Figure 1: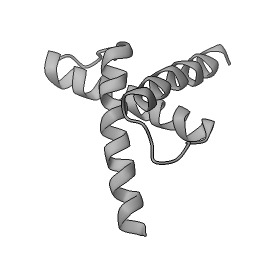
Figure 2 (figure 1 turned 135 degrees about the vertical axis):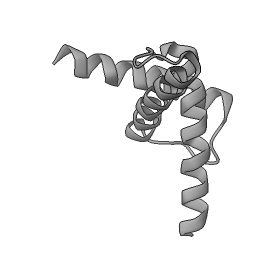
Figure 3 (figure 1 turned 120 degrees about the vertical axis):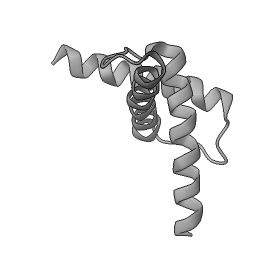
Amino acid sequence: MITLLMWIVFGWIAGSITDALWPPARQRRAMETIGIGIGGSIAGGIVGSVITGSNYAPAGIVMSVVGAILCMFVWKQLNEVSK
């Protein structure tokens, strides 16, 4: 249970930093911010694993924000295509 709470809080922090760096055209809901932050943590971990060549590379806040920016770009592209 505590691990899930930590993922949510860390995702919220990474998503909030990403929102500050890339202001949205509209205000995002908390669940969208958390989802983008968690997705960014996962993407950042994958990128970190590729860069370091190890099977497991914890993302940390910097790679999580980089991954969240990547997720934000994909999110924006998918929303524009669906309109």
